[in-house]
Image 1 (cartoon, rainbow, N blue to C red):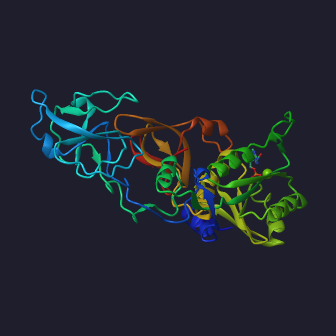
Image 2 (image 1 turned 135 degrees about the horizontal axis):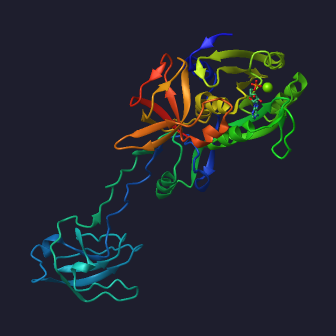
Image 3 (image 1 turned 60 degrees about the horizontal axis):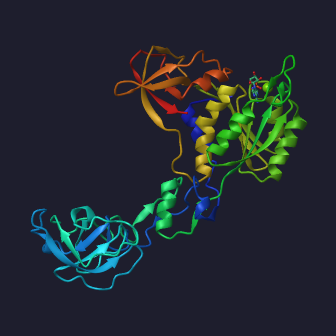
Length: 410
Ligand code: AMP
Ligand code: MG
């Protein structure tokens, strides 16, 4: 059993995965989906010169001398509501009432807001006046959003691999993309293993515990943008493990994830079952928690065996499975947010790359981290109390108080 660094183990795993196929979905269903193509602007934005205020479209030169004690009077020749399409040319001495978002007519180069005129009335249905007094000057371009000022037709606005955010959907809608190419969601089969595991609704029995990993891991998988099929719990016997693996094959998943049964000894029969129809590596990774890790293939479907301890399987997911799901799902982002944090107290480590549960809070000008209780890998409560995993690099045995380390916000 070889000892690998976290980096080596992750690289070995990732080298086996390619992005899944793509599909085209109606825009409304694309939130959090991964864009499968670069998207280019289909038009200039804004697509036409328009007003950013309710006011009067004018020629700036006409109001160059206007002031509150010497207003400039202009003849109102048109009323331009939003959605209309003015075709006239605004001549010298003329103004047109205009609403926010309405096209600025040719000839006009500025908009004077209603509050700088004697016609400060925005009530719907009030007809435009025949004449308006302008109380201020306006520079050319004032309150006009000009065509193409935000972006030009053909510019790439969203890159392939982006996890689409609500505002991205808005921009795609603005540009007329009713349907959007995205990667399909990776399909994952998940099972727990162990004779000690009870279902969540069972009363506790001597020597038994409830299966918690399948809940944590299924939620992590879904949160990472993949679909999960929960296959239940395998007993510690080859037939039971084999039956679940066969279910995963039937479901044609992209990846099988299991928890537990990867400690030495316990592992032997899992290895046997998998190797009867594939191959299996069993690694010790130089990390804490979560040293044992299994990686292989069953009937050509990749398999990752995470450790059984609840915190270890969580950390194993973050370190190995999340990046795998990202790669499978075509995503160029979506990992945990990483911040630099100052340690409140000295932290001792054992030289392995360590992922420690911590509470991170805002200090003066930086983040400060405090560990949440004892770091036993079965202590799920300390993970619940944490909002971050501190990453203590391999080789470090002591981080003095006040020193900075990286942390993933969880
Ligand atoms: P194992 O890897 O099978 O040696 O399991 C390591 C530890 O994790 C043992 O204490 C197990 O009882 C515990 N464990 C294994 N699977 C689960 C699970 N699904 N939920 C909660 N604890 C588990
Ligand atoms: Mg076990």
